[in-house]
Length: 138
Image 1 (tube, rainbow, N blue to C red):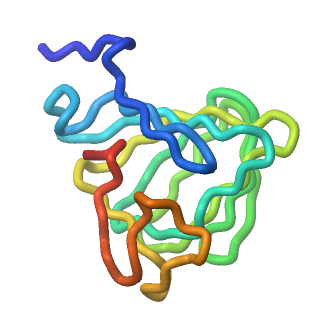
Image 2: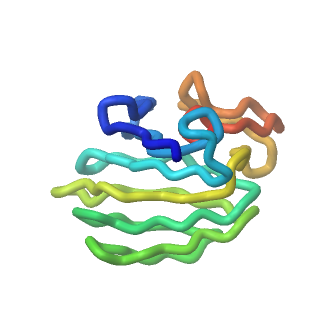
């Protein structure tokens, strides 16, 4: 039985948050990926799409979500189901930020809506029509 110790969790930092891999194919040999997202107050995630469903449960703080043009908010204890192939953008609460646990199928790939790279995309973001497995899901 694989046990991933807290001090073995893999952390990936981006300009808008830290993703901590709790389990994935390369961390514990899991068939699902589970990670923690910590976004500081006022952070804005990139506009992007995933080819699989994701489930987010907020542990603390709050966020706003734009999912295919539909906007909603979530607070600590709320769970958000983000369907596959719908553009999404996450906005951390301006005073508290948030922490969430996220799960998705192993191998989930991120891509850019319309195949266009944002001008402010970070180094690990997909480029143009590329589809990538982010490091916290691998």
